[in-house]
Image (tube, rainbow, N blue to C red; front, side, top):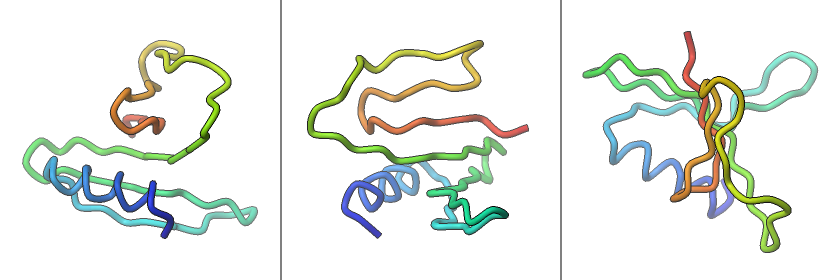
Length: 80
């Protein structure tokens, strides 16, 4: 696990999430993290992206199902 993913994992766990990482899916795709908070029943799918020169500012996308967090720079999506 790279350092950026380790930071995100630590943050998710500090927020009360149980996490699974590096899940291989069909088509040789990979999910960085799936998390569930047992107290709130919130479920998240997190993909970690790091760049020393980001191309764009961090911004909300779509109908707020997707949002980029300023603290981690990762995409967070609520699962149904």
